[in-house]
Image (cartoon, rainbow, N blue to C red; front, side, top):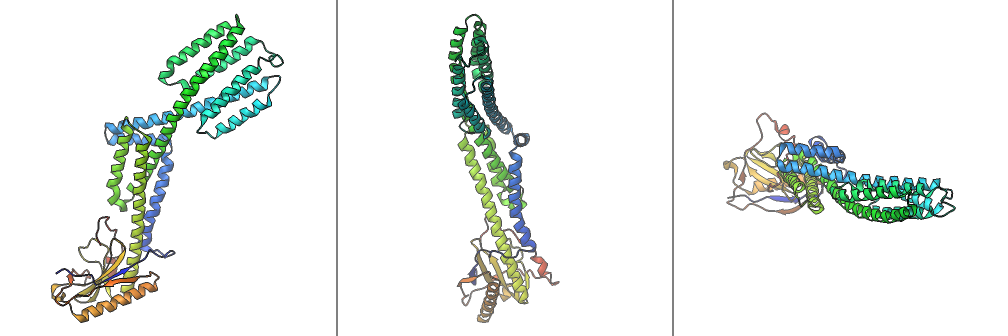
Length: 443
């Protein structure tokens, strides 16, 4: 007949400030190293080159889908680079406006201040670049109007028009119109600019009207294209950030051999990441969902390690108390858990183990069938030892309290285990290293 548990006590969370030493300290260091690995991976993966290297390495060891994922990462990087180039273009155009203002005989302080404000805003790479762009367009138009005022317009109209055409040409050639669908639009604008340039000397007034109308068309097209590209760039940035987060969390998990039971989950998330990046339906939501999964796995591993530190610390305290009470201590033979076994009589022992919900379980066991019979004197002895064990654990500030105690009935037998205590008294080295509980292990 299977035996009942003799005594169960509840053990609280490890007391803050507890001194960790030896194997317990080594186990606690695994959790700290895992955090360090995550931060190191995050720092490295923020580099676009590193991100592409990771993608290429995946492509080398996996399949065509991984190659497509690598290409997609490269495309996302190009989108971000293009967005940065667009912001730089706007910044350079504003600087040119400021220079034109300074070259005027009568400088508008209001326009100068507005240009400086825009440059300050761009320095922080704002998300709402369209607001900056619209203000740039307004200032550009106001400068064009200001140059028609006699007291300001000291230069020949032809020279002013050619300045305006040069500015518009640089805008048309900006990265905002680099995409293939914009090729015909750009060519049309360049042809119009060439036609106006030929018209400047012959019909300056007509050319001025054409410049004004063309400026409005160019600015409208630039705004639409920059609005679209910025949305794409923002999405690509979120995807890249989420990808970095996923890879950093997974790297931290995979680099810890103590977390081997979690490595398959990490591999599954990594495979899903490759599939998502290779998919034509790639979206921010699909990647951020995987980022949440990777972070949850990382947090689960951290919780697992912390629980193992607690278990190892408590196990260490139990072992020290039992050794101090004069008993030989070892582990149950052929056991896959972190139980400790103390020999209290030649044929009888006290097994102490942690279950999966954090209870410290003590059980009277026999080393052979011949000693498995239950009698009152055996139970009283084990109860007395358990009381003493709990008292001494409390003195070490573990704060244990008894949850329940059950007694064997007449006719029942103790659970029989093989004694781990060797004749050469190697009991102390037998449990010098803590064992990690399996994630699916029952208490």
